[in-house]
Image 1 (cartoon, rainbow, N blue to C red):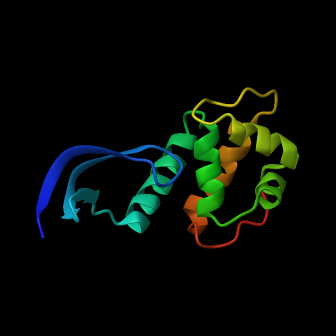
Image 2: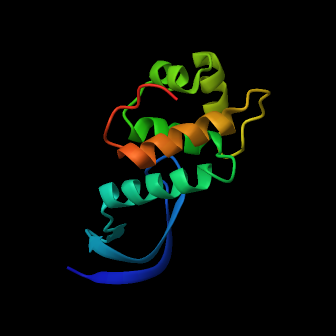
Length: 128
């Protein structure tokens, strides 16, 4: 099987573009495919977004990634953030831009992040 290393590759499989470096590609039936440990990339992206959320606003797709990574639906996540589910849906629809809002979601999200970092992301968060 033929392989090659690509110095920089933008992966879109998690709903948020992630730039990976030194990605091994394998050639199968004439086409090149990246060899990616998706679980590792998702875990690292989650950790990076938690860090980012402490100091900068997240985009709609980043908020959605965090929610999906935690295996929460929109109702659960909106209850934790103390907002309406429709508000969360609108934020997530902002895609690659930072949602426009009058709600101080950044402060609520920072409290959630602090709890996740303290408890470990695999444990349930009851309230912020």
